[in-house]
Amino acid sequence: MDFISEWFWFFLLIPLAAVCGWVIGRRGGERHSDNQVSKLSTTYFRGLNYLLNEQPDKAIELFLHVAELDKDTFETQVALGHLFRRRGEVDRAIRLHQGLVQRNDLSDPQKVQALLALGEDYMRSGLLDRAETVFTDLAKLDARAPQALRHLIGIYQSERDWQKAIEMATRYEAETGEAMGKLVAQFECELAERLRSAGDIDGASAAVARAYAADSTSVRAGMLEGRIEFDAGRFAGAVRAYERAARHDPDFLPEILPSLLVSYEQVGDPTGGRAFLTEMCEHYRGIAPVLALTRLVEASDGVHAARDYLARQLKERPSVRGEAALIDLSIADRTDPVATLHDLKHVTEQLLVRNPSYRCNRCGFGARSHHWQCPSCKEWGSVKPLLNYAVV
Image 1 (tube, helix red, strand yellow):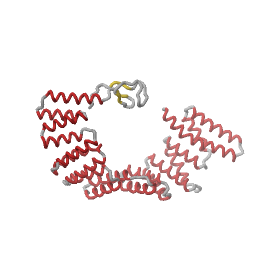
Image 2 (cartoon, rainbow, N blue to C red):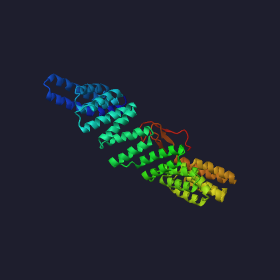
Image 3 (tube, rainbow, N blue to C red):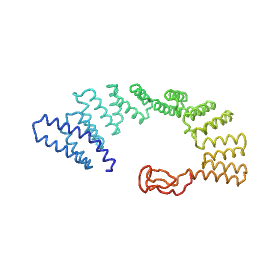
């Protein structure tokens, strides 16, 4: 058992040890048998000693023994069931928690706690239908049990029942005040994808609209709307949707650009395209918008203008893909080879400066200079020179 696992069990068992200690004290007050109290006290302190000596397996067995001596105490039995589940003995946890649920002497909060534990047992064992039944009953029994709704959301996600997942997420937000719009938007987009694949374009569009209502900045909804408009030949609508999605999150620009460029071409709006891509160059530091702009410059102003534009841009944002495009344009433009080599040399030098020469083989930390101890993960001797320094 590694260090992390040992401390995990230590912190897991400390609360159970405290419960067991309380049980011993209570039993010591109720019972007249000094021998029994002495036996329990000895077991309890032996268990703590095992924990302190990093022998969690032996401690677990002792605490299980102590807990089983007090089968009427609710807290002890719940702790014991959780311990069974964490040890992988889910069947034992289910039987124990089922017994708790069937007890008539539980308070309402205890009933909720027992049902939650039983539902989690079922989820751990893969019995999602039973878990769904338990959590649904719990949600009806006590509206103050949002954890049941959380579990139901997880179940419906795994079952890809997006409509029910949406219902549970909406209810969870209403009962807790926690914003669930972004999650609901993802579920609506999953539903839209399914409807679009089935040929129900109107249904897919309605789901996209609901996704926007749940999360007005949903990039996925914008990309889906753009695809629906593109496939229908409504290229002006596709441009609006794709541009809105890219503005919400420029990191998705490379995914959007191919269809967006075709849409610009179909609507005959190269000026609008150049304006938007120039705007994106200010917000996205990758090479994608520059290469797209290069294509538009080539189409309107010719190969020479496109080559000059790209060469200037690569000085600010060097890129291997940009170098390849510059070579192609230089060949097409029949540019002086010396000038081309000069431009390529400058870009390559910029790439080498930015690229790390050393990397930690434990955590991946990159550095320009060598460190015997990794500044990130603190491992000794793990930072080594890279085999080559070229950016790919």
